[in-house]
Length: 195
Image (cartoon, rainbow, N blue to C red; front, side):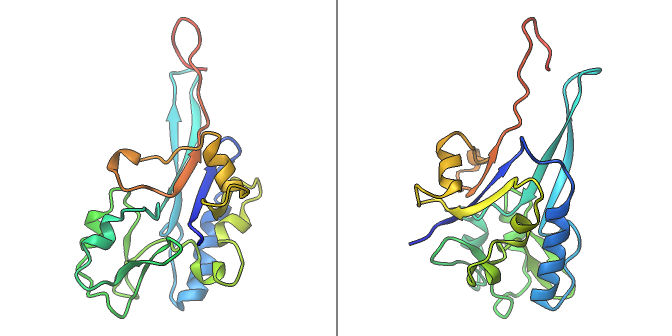
């Protein structure tokens, strides 16, 4: 069995938004309806530190494809579901547009797709993954900051990165997120402050 996950390496991300653009283009084609820039995945710029030593960090917003997804458990029709390889998808034919899943997601990873009249979210480009391809955001990243693969395969790059310290942001929600981050650590100087 495969258990898909992603690692985002914040040490190498340059904030170019190639992942955001690739996601919008690929999924607009796949859905046959426009996916707005930043809808399924986005990068928020966060300033850290104290002047004059501030640092710009990139916070990637994406569905975490949780092990215990609250979006799936609240769905009254079964439209939100988990595939056997751990990807959370939406069956738009079953969705009644109640938006319970949007409210239940602690990561703000879902939005209403106006053309579909239903909630939408990142799917790890499951239509590509089933064909042996990587998600569009992973393929488009010029610095290889997004890594996708089988979390249960000890030989996979995602598994090695998780074993060596990549962390799931938001683990306190107890949802078991499967998107991990290699932090861009800001180390404190001796005597206080940040580098």
